[in-house]
Image (tube, rainbow, N blue to C red):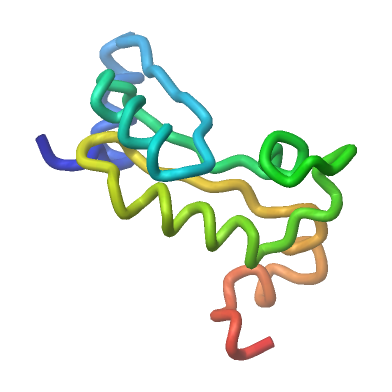
Amino acid sequence: MPRKTVLDLQSMKADNQKIVMVTAYDATMARLVDMAGVDMLLVGDSLGMVVQGQQDTLPVTLEDIVYHTRAVGRVLQSAHLTADMPFMSYQLSAEQALAPRASW
């Protein structure tokens, strides 16, 4: 089954279908929840507390999110993948939020 797209999710919502979303931070968990048939998988900034042992999400960097999102994305077969933007990674300007990292 190909990965679900935003259009697939919009169609599910329009049809009043339930959409299942689970958070995962590594390839092993991502593979398991994908095999279970979840619709969406989130790599959240909560990885700061769950994986890194931080007290909150503030120390999580964009590089942390990119690393974990790549690991998760390598194994997904059908779930739609989405990721958090860490605190202050997008609030300086809209242009900076959308610019490739190399242009910073």
